[in-house]
Length: 106
Image 1: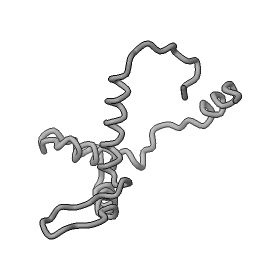
Image 2: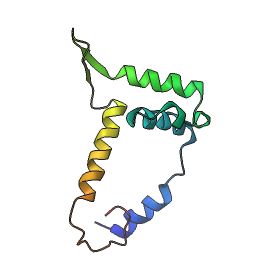
Image 3: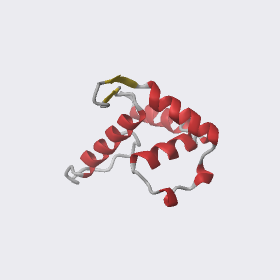
Image 4: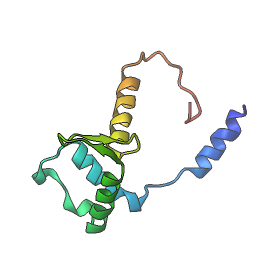
């Protein structure tokens, strides 16, 4: 595998912050961390972001039982956030004896 070529392509295709999704991501962050109302910066998102976030949150509910418990699809935004945090926690708990690679993807 040609790592130089792969690294070059990766660097060429990297993108800046996606402004369209930043408001929705902020909403998910606030929901996931159960932020207090006083801690939420309402300038970070719009009413349209709220509508989009609500639509995505409700679209990936797979089932609800009689007790009101819901089952979420693994694609549900909250499940994706939880999975990312678990992956980061796992990476942070691994041994630190790694040689630093010159490539971003390794």
